[in-house]
Amino acid sequence: MIYCNRLLFVLLLFLCLPNTSHGQSVPIPSTVAGNSLIRLNQLGFYPSGPKVAIVLTNAGGPFQVTTPDGKKVLFSGTLSEARKSSISGKTARTADFSAFRTAGTYVVNVPGLGRSYSFKIEPNVHHDLAAGSLKGFYYQRASTDLPEKYAGQWHRPAGHPDNHVLIHPSAASATRPAGTTISSPGGWYDAGDYNKYIVNSGITMGTLLSLYEDFPDFCKKMTVTIPESGNQLPDLLDESLWNLRWMLTMQDPADGGVYHKLTNPKFDGMVMPDKAKPDRYVVQKSVTAALDFAAVMAQASRIFTSYNGELPGLSDSCKTAAVKAWQWAKQNPDALYDQDAMNKAFDPDVVTGTYGDRDASDEWIWAAAELYLTTKDDNYYTTVNPFPDEKTPLPSWPQVRTLAYYSLARMRSQLTPRGQQDLPKIKAHIIQQADQIKQDVSSQAFQTPMGKSAGDYIWGSSAVAANQGIALIQAYRLTDDKSYLDAALANLDYLLGRNAVGYSFVTGFGHKTPMHPHHRPSVADGIDAPVPGLLSGGTNANAARQDKCAGYTTTIADEVYLDADCSYASNEIAINWNAPLVYLATALETLQDKLSASSTRK
Ligand code: 9MR
Image 1: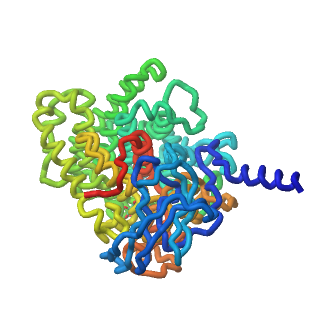
Image 2 (image 1 turned 45 degrees about the horizontal axis):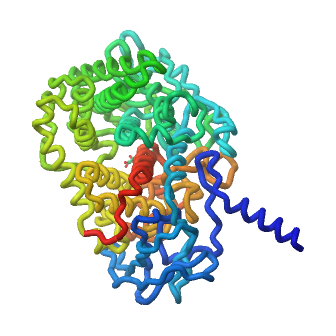
Image 3 (image 1 turned 180 degrees about the vertical axis):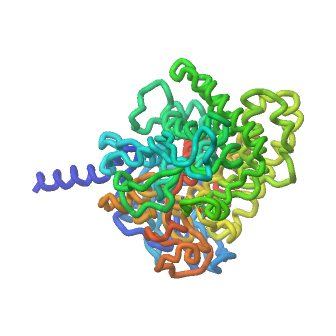
């Protein structure tokens, strides 16, 4: 009997221990299935930070924080006044237990409703998420085996060697006629599909490299178990290099132009990477690809000067590549990517992701800023008008203007006098944007910046939440005002379960997580659990119309989400969504001691 109990204990202990060897954690099993009306960050909270659960109930009354079995009450409180969601009309109340700071594993209990999923209060509560979402990029690597040692049960053979990539007729040039081949291996698969797109790589790399520039000391310590771990470079830079080196191959050395994408004509089936065999092409060079490429290469050049010993020549090569791409863009300012027009003029037709953009003015601003910061040459800065209007648009793949403001602010001590002149304006843009993001948060149903407007629920809305978080952190860095950090954390809470659908949108992190993302390896590998550390695009008001997947049950903007692999408009994963998650989780881990003790936000 005693032996039996011991065995049970060891078994339970084994089940409960977080497994971080592959950068993913195994959730601690909760003793109850969380009550679906209590929404909270399913990973947990920092001891000294704000701690909030949202309870969807008309009835007011008490709540408690208890041990997961409900037996021991450790904190008692009263639900807040009711608030009505302006989107769904549903009633929400807050269970605020910020004052409770004791580390441990708990649930929120609402008498009459039940208990939430279990969560932790502990320092570094998002560390595994930060590392796991960075590790998500490793799983997206093209052209390489993912051995079990690094990929665990998701190990797989290499796919898409991309060493004989055809020049599409739209990309033909004197030195590279149509039908000839180039080698363009490596890089990350963009999303649930296996194609590689420069524009989307642009904002993704900009976000990851900016994370490194913003928090170098913390990033240097973050390890994620990839083949390069243990070399002289931080894992974040090693992982980024996997894609940077691919990007470099996408530039035509003859003229500096950059191919818009490397792609099959049609999307692959739902098969593993090594089973996908169609011809791959590089297509038309575009001005947006060239400028995003120039921005990334300029920033990378800055960063890799510190690693000239380990990576001789890389920093210089990046700078040269950036300048050449910029010059090409100057000569080809109208070379926008228009897939329909391309398909009318050339064969084969290409129907994969377009990342088309009719306005390159923001790409000019971003590239100019990064080149200026790296070269200190005012000419880059003065070629464009960095302030075409008063707006500070939230970064997204077609809108990268604000990435320039972030970089200029970050490097403010190194600006030339010309840049210094504009510094007050740059700061004002960043602070006004963040103020607008955190305004009125306390009156929202879920008390998160995300979802103040139904318009936040677009394709890839999870990245809206994460990018709002980054915007808030940028403002914190300029002001030291903790309320920006609290608001950023609220958006991380949103991503991890404090939202209108009750999902943590990150595969493998939380209790109720996407099990069927539109992600080819996750569908085809025969393993129940999807590849971990990947951020689902999340709630999308227009998803049903866009992907026509059967099974959507509502049209309420903040509730349209379907955990099905046909739902590519609400449940795909993508590198440009994962990158701001890595940023947000890592930044909050770095700044956890600066959070305010109270959840009261103005
Ligand atoms: O993230 C993109 C989203 O903004 C667009 O509305 C959508 C439709 O054009 O495409 C998304 O990007 C997809 C890309 O085209 C192909 N790979 C998967 C991407 C994520 O769904």
